[in-house]
Every structure is written in C-alpha cells, then in structure tokens.
Image (cartoon, rainbow, N blue to C red; front, top):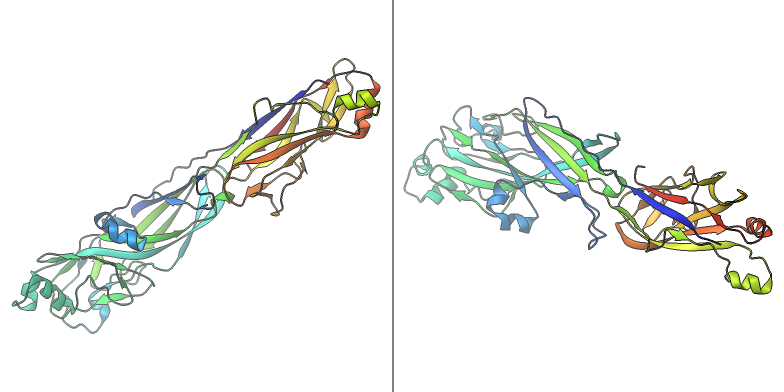
Length: 414
C-alpha cells in the first residue's frame, strides 16, 4: 500500500490598532508586551515597555530596590496666594492626594472586538517645589540651607508626610527641593508650613504606577488599547489642595498592550507522508493469511504554543465528517479516522487533557485548545486509523493502492 500525504498548516494572526488621542488633555502612553520566553515558560505576564523618565531615570538604584519606575509629566502647579504659617486647614498648604486605589479600564482588540480588563494604581509621586524666596530668608536666617528647608516645614521633604512613605533620595537648592514619596494608600499627604511662604510652585509631576494585566494566554495576537482619564484640581483624582492649582485639569493614560503569540508545529522530515500499516506489518498477513484488524500510524510532531487555537481537517476525498483515501482505478474510498494527542500544558475548553481527540471536518469537539503555560516544542501525536470493516473491503479487491491528502489545521483565530 502506498502512503498518503498529510499537510500541516498553522495560522497565527498579528492585529494592530491605532489609538486616537483625546483632545484637550495631557496624555501619556503606557505600553506593555507579551512575548513568550522559552527560558521562562511559567512567566506568562506582560512586560512593561513604557520608557522611564523623571525620578527613576535620575535615581535608578533607588527604584530598582523598590521595584518602582516613574513617568514625568509636564503638569505644573502654582499657589493662588500665600501659604500661611501654621495654617489650620491642611488643604490651605502643600498637599497631595493621588489615585493610589486600583482603577479598572477596558482594553479592546481592534479586529476582533475582544475586550479585557486592565487595572492601574499610582504607587508614588514626586516633584520639585520652588519657593518664592530663599529658604534661609523665609525662616529668618542664622541656619544652613538644609536646616532652613527642614525648619520651613518642620521636617525635610525627603521624609514623606503620613500616610505617604519615604522613597530614599531628595535634593535641594536655595529655593528648591526635589522629592519623591510612595503612596501605599489613597489619602491626603500634607506638609504644614511653619513660616509664611509668599509663593510656592511645583515644576512637574512624576508618578510611579503598578499594573494588573489580563492573562495573555487567553488573548488573541495583536494590540489591545484603552484609555483612562484622571481629573486634576481641588477635590479631584489628582488633588493638590485648595491653594496649589495645577496647570492641566485632566491626565489621560493611553494603554497599549501588544500580544505576540507563538503557534508553531514542527513535523519531522518525511512526516508529511504517512503510510498506514497493520499492527504486525504486511508480511505477517502474507504469511498467515489473516486479514489485519486495522491499519494505522501515529505521527509525532512538536508544538510550541502560547495562544488559544482550534483544529480541523480539510480533505482531498470526503467521507461524511472525516477524510477518506481512495483507490485510483475503481474510485472505491474508505474513511480515515484522525485524532490528536496534545502534550501536557495544553487542554480543551473545559480544562481536560487532550488524548486521541477526534478531528473532524467541521471542527466539532476541537473548537478550543488553550495553554496553561507557554508550551515550548513539546511532543504530541496525530493518530491515523482505518477500521476493520474498511480494511476487509480494501483487501477484498486484491492488491490495490489507496491514497489521499489529509490537511490538519492548527488555527489561532479562535
């Protein structure tokens, strides 16, 4: 019996979506990518690819130790009037309240319309304050510059106002002090002026953030985008008190999550030609005269997958919902049962292992296979078999050759 060929096709889609900017808002992009790493198959998370600027660019060692990174915004603020000494209301001085609680937003895939949820929180913030006068002048002189900054607020700004927390580094000049505070909770962190400050401003706003991203193994290849807008001003998401007024009333973060899946199937050389034979081989039949009970062959393959996929058949000769092979002269055809076994780490939609799962032309029963982790070049098998009744019908015609093409499809467009 001559062999018949099996073609394997895999389909991986890469989809792109452009983000349309929102007008009249300060904007920044937050980017992250998932690209499977064979050396770290258990790390199925997005990698934040947003360029770092501001505090963490200046003090990378401090941020590495705290697993923190920052973005600098051209969001400035200036006092609407003088800050009174020993003001009773903390909102009449220098204060910060940032969106430290988790906020959820929806990101959408342009081509498929699939949606996922991303969560973000601010984990820290910082700036450089600038005084209208030299710090020594404001406290009456007679002290060092560092001591003057300390006396002006009762403690240095390197030490955060509670419940905000110290981050490690600060710097100062005659009128300026650079600081960065961690924000473990969403609450007001205020410094009380001990002396009259005729004018105060903030030169920029740095912020650090944390992300909670969806499981990329359940997402389609391509780019997901979405936006989250924070309001800025007294009593808003970014709240600097009632005296310090920000230069922008809103900040929009544009999120761009890119998924670069792997779906690769490797068949050994010559594996696309499969010869179906009896259990004992043809010689046993010729010697004993007993017809074989079945013809079969298991064809190994290696699969690398980080994405969902489905499987189905395409056939040169059709027999119901499966493929067939046919004898060229008479046109007599017999069905071929095709099934698949997938390696550990790949399951069906119900989370069950895939062992000799039937492959059909309409794809029923194999509509969804999914990885629990990145599967890197693991071994699976395609099983081809002709049942006993069909074998007898083939052999009754004498020595004949049956051939046919069976195409097994791995399709990531689920």
